[in-house]
Image 1 (cartoon, one colour):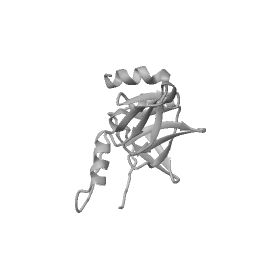
Image 2 (spheres, rainbow, N blue to C red; image 1 turned 135 degrees about the vertical axis):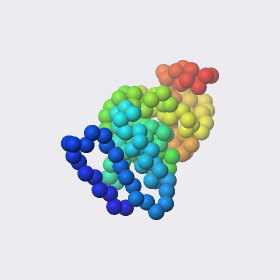
Image 3 (spheres, one colour; image 1 turned 120 degrees about the vertical axis):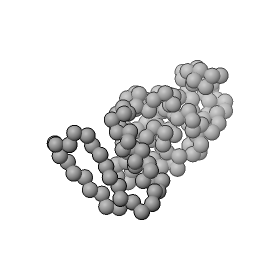
Image 4 (tube, helix red, strand yellow; image 1 turned 60 degrees about the vertical axis):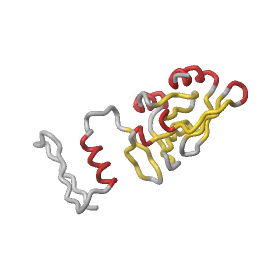
Length: 148
């Protein structure tokens, strides 16, 4: 796809014109993203395979620290390296996410199931199959968010 961007200080409001043969899901997503420009909070970007991707919170299932990196996983288990500390990402992700430990935040709408673990922890499995644990110190707030 050919993309052209013209930057001009005379432009009072940004606009876009797309010349397309047919509407595709990718083009519809791009249009939706452009229409929401300026409405949402800080942008969320992830790096995968040397490329930077714009991510929406709905796309992510799990965000956690892995060594010195903050990793976000989508529904296909694709891993993105996110920028910023976990507490800032928690604010950007919004109310659909909940912290389950000092090192992980999950998308409540993408939980597959939860089961009791050892030592008061709970094991959590996301719809993409990734597993993590809800630590004892975050178990009460997690249950409150689920209404349990």
